[in-house]
Image (tube, rainbow, N blue to C red; front, side):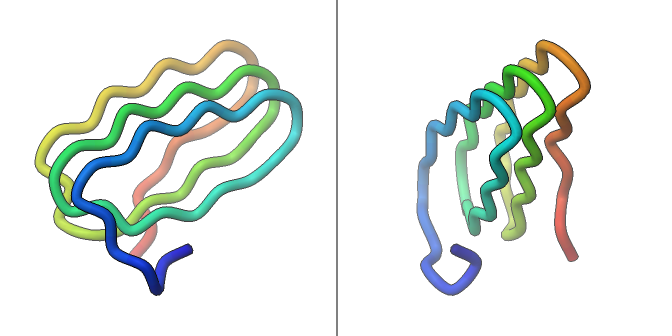
Amino acid sequence: AFDCPLETAKAKLSGSGSCELNVTTTLDAQVLGSGSLKHKGNTKNTSKKIYGSGTVERAY
């Protein structure tokens, strides 16, 4: 959730789910399928792996 800031997050989405994160330092994101992960915050390190038509995007 955007209202709960995290320093570090590791997220794995499988299928068609969605996720919203507020991460300040490190985000490790993996999307398998058509899932959508949106993140905001001043993320310094972002690692993303996408298998399929899914997305990892910055939210403003």
